[in-house]
Length: 342
Image 1 (cartoon, rainbow, N blue to C red):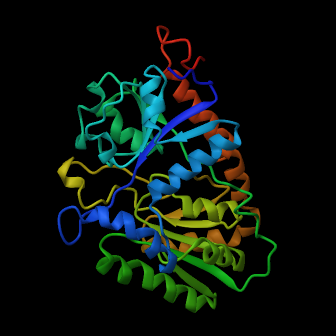
Image 2: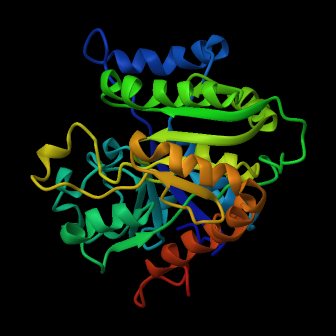
């Protein structure tokens, strides 16, 4: 047995690459993906992978040694906790006996695997925000649920408030469903409104940019209008807030995933900006109230302090501390001596 320092964190991750043309072709994709990414423009990794990277960076900055997908080390230390992050395929035929902290990610709704926590190895399940906690709690229970967030690396997303501005409003377009409805009902009327006001705007669409391009847009922009049905965390708008851009967010108020009717006949509350306060900006529910709320938003630009909110509520240090608090909860009294202690 390899005795582990209590500064070691064992994480396991599996992404998701579907078959496209024939059964098993995702294995071929794994081989060619690095070559493809050299030439592909726009976002190259999933939000799940970004969340994993931020978790690992936060832990490493806090002085922990992160071991990723080290099955042998976990097998040799069966009482030592492990963290399972990513897509649910990771749990298929999971054979390690270690007590496990599940999430973030994995399932969109608990009814996808309602009996998940019947497995005695699975001790806690992480969700990323309040509305997800409320959705999972009736099935998984308060005993097992914990809330965690990925920290925002504020040094990588510096304050741009005093940079020269050529864009009044950066519109972040992450409308994922019913575009045939929401483009004419929401996006186009907003651009027409800004045109009438004589305000310069730019539109950046989800997955159609890289970080260098996005940072430049944030530096050039005075504010952001964030258009997304709902977010479990919302790293893009939080990166904008770290850059000190006030946010005007579309927040319909409901989980609009097309699959929602498989899980519930009742509407499920959700939020597009789950980490937000009045110091960050304003929210509107639909275009009928946009003009009034935009007027208030524009008049208060000088008093919003979104970067302060990010530094206080979404810091790397607190993200690492929160994760390790839950990770240590997995250590049991009768564990082997090398297991983590409180």
